[in-house]
Image (cartoon, rainbow, N blue to C red):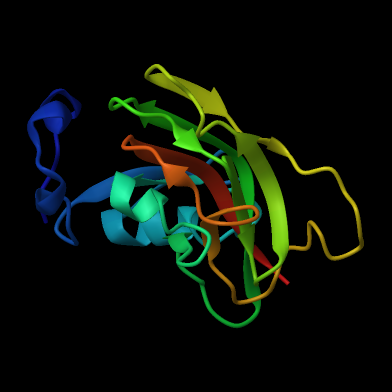
Length: 179
């Protein structure tokens, strides 16, 4: 058993935090317990009475942005049967190159094919920028569905963009829910 001095936490590498290390967890009645670090992390991520938010990001090269409708990309992989990804919020950073994207400039995040729940019209930007996705206007019962055992994907709403040479990075904050 290894003890960790709280003052040493900033210098520990993530790979050093393994089953040999312990953390203190607080029970609902106020007691404290010493538990193996990996067990504490597993408990925190189990959605056992708590909302465990997670984040992901994906940098997309301009060549891939030009094919984003015909070849959507996954930012969060499916988590298995009985679960679904609920994207809480998302933003996009555009590292402007020299030519703005033309036509089909709306990015969407969704799951399961035609389910789009966040959207932003941003690819026509002519400067480097960072913008936040907005909720999609509900046009049908399935337009914003959260789909079981489906990842969260990024695509362009209607067709592939034309022109454009800017790389983009998409950031999402999400949770895994039981369905």
